[in-house]
Length: 261
Image 1: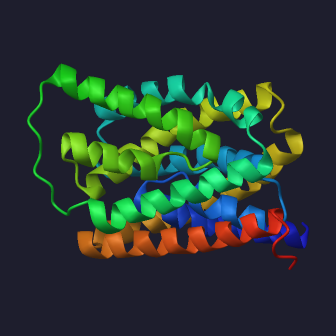
Image 2 (image 1 turned 120 degrees about the horizontal axis):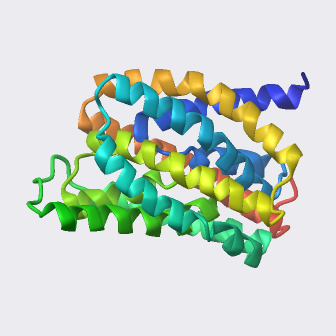
């Protein structure tokens, strides 16, 4: 095993912990890390999406066994994710490396501000009919699948504020649902990437290494989440955002040749 593979294993464990804690695919960590290693945005996104398949399936299994996951809601939002993510390959091929990195940075900043100032704790559960609830879940999945997978971030962080605002879900209820959604979006996105030549077998191999390591981290993250208060949960999430934004910012400066180190 090469030294670089050990780095992939390390980032996989850290990513898995974040996935278990916040229901994210892990791209907020993986993509900036890969950019820091000099990997292109397109390949960084591809590695992230392949990894998501492992962490989301394993994490959802653990959440289901612990009775934290509502499968009915999960399948509705997941079907929307399949539809949206199926277009992600086309979007990725249209964007340059610098443009994709810039979009990822801008998206990260928006999410950071949304969670820092826009999401209230313990929101009141909204009263909606089953049909309207399912429509919101499906549309949220489709919208998130289109944009999130194209940026390699899985969608957990994007879908969380949507479900919190329209359905009144608190952050701990959204986590298992978001992680289950990532299963559908990541598989659909990975197929789209491979079909269009965005990723090849070497990128899949790297994604598998990160993904296998992430399964260990997911188990740790879920155990930590169950013991955290909602206020502590948010603070950890904001720290992850800040780190991701910083790494992505320096990665973009290097691609623009503003920084040379």
